[in-house]
Length: 251
Image (tube, rainbow, N blue to C red; front, top):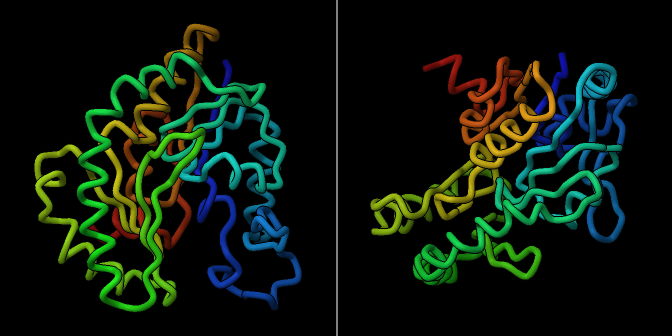
């Protein structure tokens, strides 16, 4: 039986230094990703390092991440299988070439949502310009604008919730289901509904089933938006004290 694990990266397999329990005092931390200038910014604890080595022995590992291709290339782990990028907008094959079938489908569907994304984004930028500390940008990868992200210099959810409550939640394109939002830590994203990890993982699972008569699948992730793709899998793995863990533990 062939086993696959669909694995979220940030805050599942590694995290920024401030999110590590012991911080810089932990002698066992290992660098797992860096910034564009080469400086380290993501680290794996000893347990996360053990988890990776365990997964390597028995699973085909498929990263399922919100990172774009440049940020993924800065992850210091030897992935061998397909890769899901940009929250499901892009799939790369084992040779790190674009999956053309998936991309063609996205390109056919995306134009119906593009103007709606730009419409809400104009309102978000107008609101954020009234206050200090906000950083907004539209994610462009492979020459396509996929979705938007808002961060704040405070590094917390609190200021981002003001944007969410005052601009995003009641926007017509959110209410009609064309777009959706996701907030976790210092990351508030607004995405077209066609961009999601669940659809991309479903596409890959169907492909793998054609290759392997018997398939065992695991899903691992920390965020509430990881839950749908994890729900496609036979088993789910959730790091303790993460957003999804707390949602399930206290619901």
